Image 1 (cartoon, helix red, strand yellow):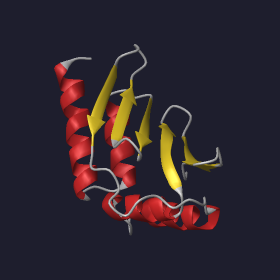
Image 2 (cartoon, rainbow, N blue to C red):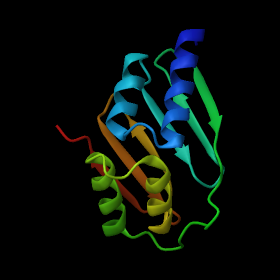
Image 3 (tube, helix red, strand yellow):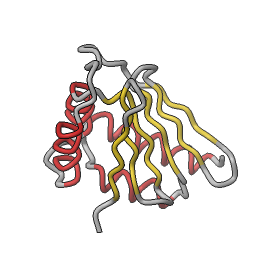
Image 4 (cartoon, rainbow, N blue to C red):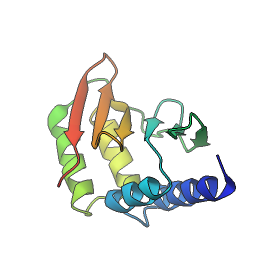
Length: 131
């Protein structure tokens, strides 16, 4: 991974964590540097970015202070996603809402234009990017 790509991913990660850019901007910025997908693991506090050439970048963030709900609530996940898609819910709030809904992490498939949200017992919710 070249220094420009690393820098762009880091800047996008930082802005998202601070809640200064919305989900659409995250996707746009990561696509510009050819990120193929990324995985967020709330339990470990890690986000891993994957590029088509096989290179990866692993970045740490604060683990949930409130914990993650035991039960995966699909309706609450969908509500948090809708808020993020509409730009009303920024990432710090999205993390809290999705963790309260029992989401342990998710994978964003930029190349496939969808996100897979995961629960503790293998539950999943797939959300396709809006057109």
